[in-house]
Length: 503
Image 1 (tube, rainbow, N blue to C red):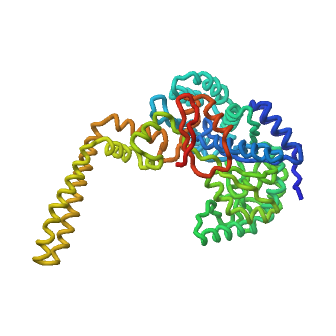
Image 2: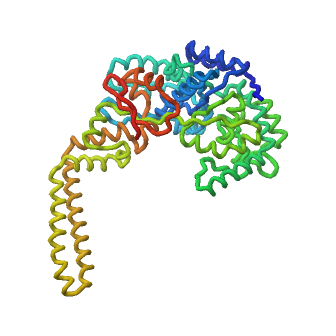
Image 3: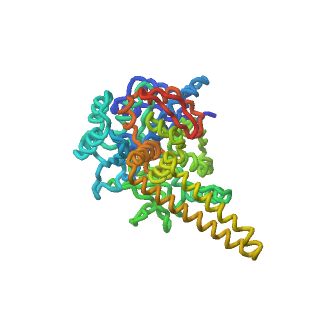
């Protein structure tokens, strides 16, 4: 039987939130659809990163939009929803971002937080005049293009003093996803929190069973050779308590739910009463959050990254214990965007994307090896020495068969010495050849910055400033959501795609 959802309150909150963030008519049409009992949700989510955070945040949204499009084509009403992790308290993760500067250099930006602000949930971090300096540093780093004035106007409106980090993120996401019908949701609203009370209360009553089920499933996965993504702590109550703008995990100790750092805590009855009276004081932990999300939303499909997809493998028993169906899972788009200049360098030097994770120094040496014909002289020297030594083998064997072993050791020693000379030569040339050094750095920073996939390190405005919204719109509108391999997309100076390929 179909489950009933409290759609009226949910959609009222969504209308208010999305109106505040500047969403367009397509989003409000999607919210009207969501109010209908047969509509399902295609859900994804992420923390509220600075200037939208890394590229994969957008890739999640695009995949949810594409899945909803696919489901609607099958005759099922479906809407994409982006659940903002507004209560995440890892500020180090959400207050920084990286991008390519106008000269191809890597630029790290960070909104500075005080010791007093550290540990606060993201929705409690109110931006002040510090954001203006960070925002202007971003705009100075971006290339001067026809798209820069529009980007500057957007970010000066969205990332401004007086709004929270979450509000700034939501406003920017709403603008970047105009005409897609993407619904943004901040679950920290008190009315949304009240909708969570039934499932959170059930988790309180059954915390011991849930904890044991999670530990057992984690052990079962380890026994099969999988590495669990969630590491349950003994006594964890699956809840955070929000006090003085700090999220503190609740544990079961000596018959009471207490904060990890101490305090009087609650009995089970007291905790249930507090949940019912002030639900805004509580939020689910990483294991319970997806379950709460799916208790509130008619989720058909959840779009997640690799780690999220992996930790859903541990959550089956928790869904079952709370009488909730686990949604279908869809991997988000995984993609490296290759601009014309890096594409030319990859082709010229015969490099693959995976080669770049070795780092700038290793790639610089690879480029040298492909451009220096005189490197072959070392190979010729090695062959000549090996051949000369090999001519001694019959003589040594006739004199004493055991002398063949020292012969092999001599050959290996000479091979290593010639290789050492080759390395010294290449390093000396590398120090002198600034062009190749710059090319190696440009390649690594553009395609594998910080030794990571581009999508995990680079901010979207690197590309929006160079190619405008056209590139992203083309990828989003043509995306097929069943591609599981990492893609590599080459495109022209105008931002027209030249076709994706496997990494």
